[in-house]
Length: 506
Image (tube, rainbow, N blue to C red):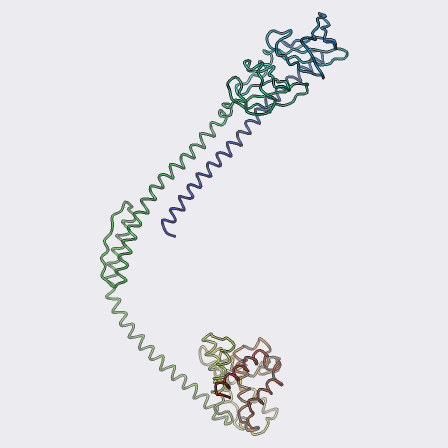
């Protein structure tokens, strides 16, 4: 990877990190904001609900609570103690009921008036503003008692009593303070418990998180600025060094004498690298002369070895050919047989798509020496004009084993030895000497086997005259396909024979 690409990738990752931090900051802010809001709203609403329930419960049990005024009324709203008619000041539809007027009736100042039913009469509970404020005062939130129409009856912040806060959960502005109003229904008709959380209350809790997150974000941005500056210096200096090295490399490629002149950069490591390049070039120049002399000497040695190898290969080929001829001289009926097998076997191997040089060489020499073991068979059996007896044929069947024993003495000829041993095996397992079947017989041995049979059929033997090509092919097709040879192998061999015939115009 190029340095500029790597640097750009790091810059992209840096910006991605900043973007991730911003996203984490926003998500964390929202989550903490929601948790703060949930905590304050649920805590204060629970306290307000418990306070009202406690007051009503104490009243029903006949317990007097300090600063809370209790009056007994008839259903016509007549004060049973003073017989004063309060129907103009009070009204209700269902019980218990919150009277919407926030002005005090029996208490001085503002108050919340709740009507509840007690046997055959009504009880008027008047909760003064001072009592409400003393029990629910909080520095971070304001607790409200609100009517269904949104009118504030009681509040821990006296200034907003009598104002209309609304009857929905939302951001509102109360007493010039922006905050979130959260309302919840009470068991008292026409009454809602409310909590007003000023915006600054959220930020008081969120301040440590904001400081830490901002510090992390600012630190990352500062790091990116320093990295960008360093990246510009590094890429610029590296580009100069690479350009200088490229010019020197071009001169070296043109076989020119090069004196590398370092360029001064603001990166110490690059300066040290260039000094090392100068030293390497000096060492390389000193060794070139010696290397050139060594190469000349080595080339002379290689030429001599190649000539010796060529001579050895020629001699080996002559020795092998001489061995094959010696076999044919002993078996007078097969003169020239091995040479014909070699040519057809190589053609068939190519037809089957065999291109490995080792396989082709094994097929070549395997075809040439497939009958080398006949050197161990008595001549009266080899040249017998009639059919062999059972005993004579058993002796003849040993020639693949003799041949393998001879070939195995030649290093690296294991594949050739395999062909020599198994060129009389049949795919149905009826062949010799090992009774191999199907894929147990190598394709190399099968190639030499079919070519050997075909060539033998069209050659004259002491016990029969030579057959025509058609006769030989019919015998193979009718008697040997599926027994001695695979059908696909025969099809490929047939193509080779037809191609050879067409080459001779037959």
